[in-house]
Length: 110
Image 1 (cartoon, rainbow, N blue to C red):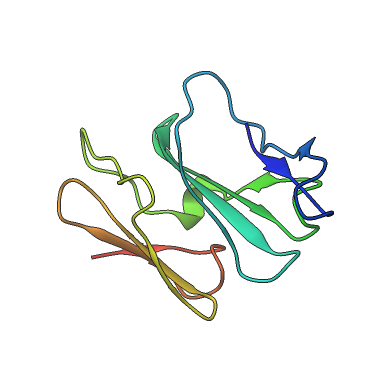
Image 2: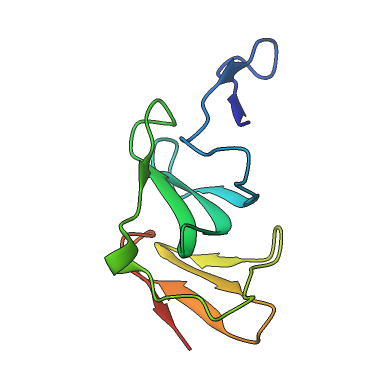
């Protein structure tokens, strides 16, 4: 579950993307106060990546067609990512690096 505070930690509200019991959150990052992403290991055959543009009130999963397929047994590392502007990268256990240059809308892998 993800929680959000707007009063310096006095109160918190749940703002989770629509993940399920088999989901595993790796990273949560906000590019701006309202625009953020949640990165998760593959589920249903592709990495589970969600975006919000309203500070986590709603989340939308990035379409499978926008994310290169993971290799068999591939997963990402918890909290391991790099960001510069709207560019974000994350490494996998198989030595590949996923990269988005548009804040998580579209992904490439090397």
